[in-house]
Image 1 (cartoon, rainbow, N blue to C red):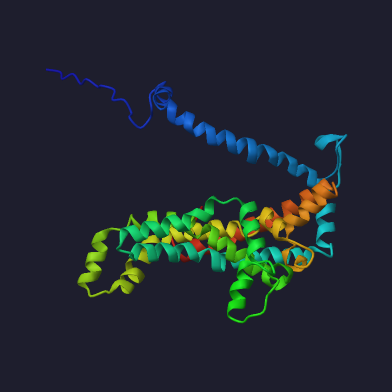
Image 2 (tube, rainbow, N blue to C red):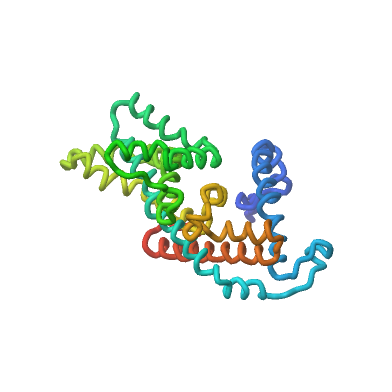
Length: 317
């Protein structure tokens, strides 16, 4: 008797059936709608304006427009590199960015570690609330507080006078500008920045602490061998973000604290772009300087990401 073999076609589940993607999208339409809002935001305010980069390579004229203006190539970049202000503003920008990474970046990590060690919950919440509050102050308010507190007859000098120290005109001395900028930045951002590290701390397995206690580790050794390795990937990612923003010094804060006396240390690339672009209406030159600033920041981010990928297993790409 001849056997009959019936072959049934089994659908390949690896390939989605026709129309199923639209079905899934329809089911998740609210998620796509939520995703569309930030997508439109970044397209409108971050990507479409990048078309204006062309101004850096053209002799821009308001009447001819971006496309109608004459091409000049890298002329404005060469002019900036030979500008007498070039080394000063590059040095000031880099120094403030490096000081931010050296002092402002570790501050939220230290605060998060200390808060994690607190056992009295009410005091812990009080410290968190107090440390979060400066983040919600605007840059104008923060600078107003600094100008008043650091003035010659301000609160800081009154406190110094109590200990017999002579008054110091902080904002009139160039050497004090970076300290004031970094110190106020730490005060304003330490609490808010610690949130992400506190969230990372909650992801550490409590059994690791129990195992460390059994091995005789005290709280310092638990922090060193359990807590820090547990949040190390988060620290590396946040460090890479900080390296990428090394050239993004707060323009508003510097401009509000800047005066003729501290100009040698407070003049940065952003304020120089403001003076040349908006005050002197030299749009092409200012765009070239701004683009140079962005390229340098991208260079630092690429180097930092490469080192991180070689040293650890954490990197942005």
